[in-house]
Length: 429
Image 1 (cartoon, rainbow, N blue to C red):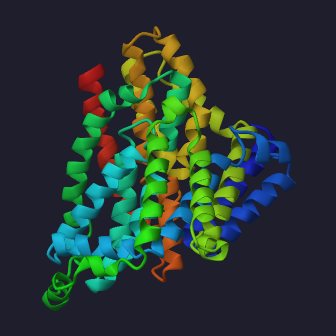
Image 2 (cartoon, helix red, strand yellow):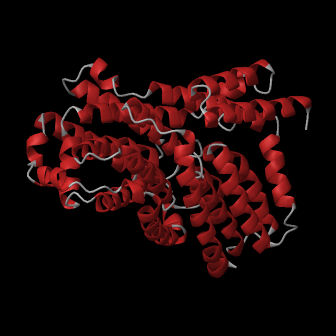
Image 3 (cartoon, one colour):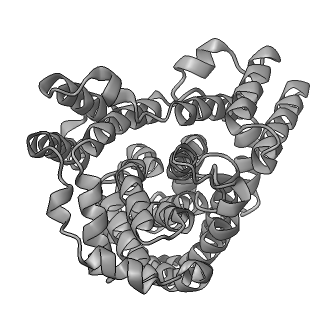
């Protein structure tokens, strides 16, 4: 590697250490790292701002912005309070039952939408229901982020890396359903069992609080029915467009922005109220992180690591599959899984061809998808949904530290990726 590449690695590791230790605010660390990458010419303005492979992923940024605006309008209707009371009553006030209900809803919704959109919608409900039951929201938010990444792995539109893989490999929505969804169902069952153990100290049942919630009428929580129906209509159209992405060919970011624009223009909600819920620090953090990772792409660091892993397999399909699964899990925990998959997918395409390019070799795509999607759970910056949850938590006065998230995420990522080994081996190899 060149001197610039080594310096870029040092800058990235230093920024990552600051984010992990929280010695410096994560936004400052990401922006500072991005600035240094530009200063040392590890990347430039063209690559950082306009290159879809090594720059800021504006699709992610504007998808988040659009959905945050929609959620901000929905929040004014009282629908989140309604859902919080409904969920608490269905769980009869029992914390573990509530967590199971929330993570199942999150996983299912993440498969139909994308996982970032889902956590944006479910987080306000979580805060409200936890407040009603005098519970800490942090464990529930962490569990939801983890469930969103697992559930999102099931479909083409569920997780951004899957969209990249489908585009490169020519895979359809049904391909993901057939090859990914069955294992995701198994992983969710295992994850629900793990939640009982991982978050056991958080399941404090308060009979008085539960009785108070059971006495509530959730319909009284709706503050503006007209705005609610308008918002739900727009949200339904946005969701439909997400699911029909393979047919309509509109990027999720475009759909989200159009939905946000229509909702603000067609209702009495002011612009100030609409953008009040936008997590600007989260968007800026993403931008800085994309620039830093893009610099590693531009200097060839990520490419060399990926190629070295590929060369180590010496053309053995089984070994290549397992190494790809493991390496993707590890690297997606360190860098965001979106730029990782964007960098790795051309290499996997070459590996598929080198292994005959037949149906059997397609297992490499599923190994990449499972490794990247599930490995993103390992750390607080491994997946977009994780970063969004941390931002929302901080904004609502329940900060979740890097290590608080990671101590749970690392266990879940390790177990779920390990379970994929026999699945890939027995079904494809």
